[in-house]
Image 1 (cartoon, rainbow, N blue to C red):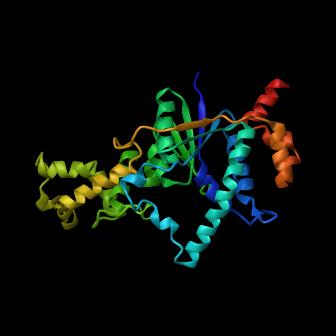
Image 2: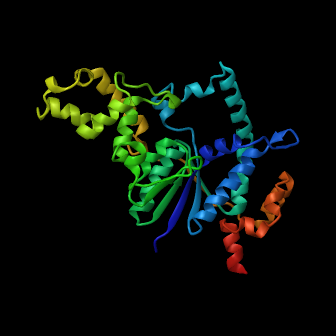
Image 3: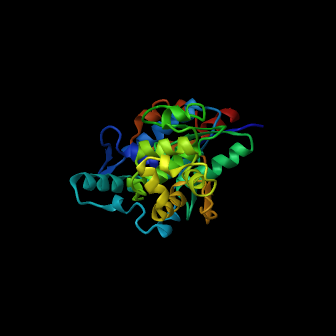
Length: 316
């Protein structure tokens, strides 16, 4: 039987929840990340009422060993903006164990692997489910997740409220395929992840390159191997690109980092799958402790979209 899965980027949703609206506190502890995370997830569980929700969490991640500077700038506190972001991250990290506890009470499966980011797990699981004929909706604001889209796999983004599938992929990304999207990112680099650009080519030129030649190596192959492309007819920036071994090596290195289906991705290590201990009573106590009265006001309806609510309905 065909199933439907809702695969959620836990930290993407969590950081967004931390910064949504005003600050909520219980004593000295901020709790808005918990409240907003659960409220947002409930909305999507209600929207995708037949889907099995799965929340993915980041492990340490193998890219940190491959690229020593990977995401290093996120820890900087040189500017007031960076200091504020660091403070908000700290508050969110304190709340994350409680989010995970609440998800357990609601019966939501959570998955984490020691050497994988949520992006990697999402690509692995989405491919597995789609290959089996199931349908997958991804939930994340991380644009890296656009790469995972394929037949049977779509991405929804909580901020823009849009749904991106293979049908409207080019309309959103300006390139026809997820593989081309990964190549554009590899050429441009990723400032947020501290991945340097290869140099001399930005978003517009990278997009034009993959659309014209299929891929970075398609251009190199056409010039150097097949001789089907006359370098004299290329613009200077492409001639420089073709002539630079350094840029080719930089591109290959970047692809090994940004391409979520790259052969360099290692095998999953120490995967933990937590199906939780569904309990409406424990979740009620959780909400009472945190004073989430809006969840309690119509408690049965509030938990209804989650596995614990569906189990309760079947038992009635």
